[in-house]
Length: 536
Image 1 (cartoon, rainbow, N blue to C red):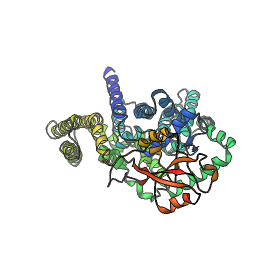
Image 2: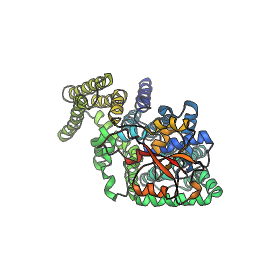
Image 3: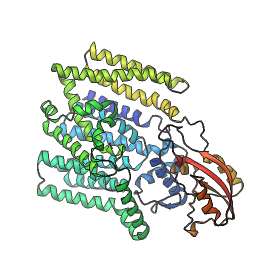
Image 4: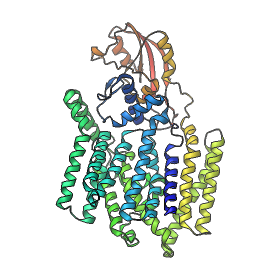
């Protein structure tokens, strides 16, 4: 028992390192920036219910994640990126803990739960999304925690309280990102549960209805309030959001078939874990394995039905996938005799990981970066990991120890690799932030407006509302006789549309807030601003 507790504590330590180490490193992406801008305006101007972004209504997403970021910003300042991201990382931490509890409860196997949870927390997509303060991770975390209590209720354990807990948590998931969580996590789980354990009885149906009512009351409370208070704006934004969902980032049904790549180091084992006939025969808990298998399958199907497809949307699938992967790895570590082809297969998989680790150790010195202590330590850690992998594969012949070395590689990457990655991504020598003109504008007691511009990352960095001017809407015109204006383009037709209103424009400077330089795909015109001084 003591050993099991120690292993669980080890899981907590590993999860904490992977999620909280260097949390303020890596620049803020567009999803985070939208959240942080809204959060800052909440704290500064009190837009706690009628959420805004750059002074305009922002009803596309529910407010719960933004509330959390706003509280952290108010406590630790909005310049502290690590503090703003902390609630998201903590949500992921809790997700991993409750995933462990789900697997442990269903399988009654602590070791299997530990292996599966380590696979989950070292999953590339889980680390990437889990350290970012966007709406997704809160929705998924509340849903996974709720699923734990939902399963307890289905198994007749404190039925009413657990259905209540589950309903509240499902509601918080909806309050984080709409019905996304129930759609991609709860429905796939329950479809798998019905296939494996049969149709619900009347007692279960009553409990599920009770849970659903609580979910709706909690989850849709904000939507209902906003609709009643500001129906025209709300409906216009919802219509725009629905249109964008159907037309933006549209990919074919087959787009998500490359999902194993999102697991990172577990890409090959995630595929092996889904070879249903083989793994089912290799476990003494075929029904529980089948539940996770169907959960993964239905999650993939439902995600693929949505026209808009992005890699980060695959996060919900990573949860049950970690369990199917864990089932095979558990069998691998327990088995004393493997068939020749299976022994060869596992040697090849871990050999690939050993080669990759060694290549990283050498390749890090070829990056266009000044070699610093973090670079050396990362290289040493990767080299030692690669060497130990080769030793455990071919000499000691312990796949379990080889697995542990992969975990160590991921922990080393979090401790030493993230600072290296941060410097590698911040490589734009032409970086010149719009914030550098802020003091000049303040000294002249003037204000900066925006026109034909959409830059949440820059709005966040500038830390002030940049009111948007719309030539078709005189209500948006500045009342001041003099002001500054920032645009993402300086094409003549845009300038002429302003000059036609009798405004005299004087070019001031060009600012480039791109952290990454060309030819990076993350270099975007959205972060380039042409600033003019305007006199009416």
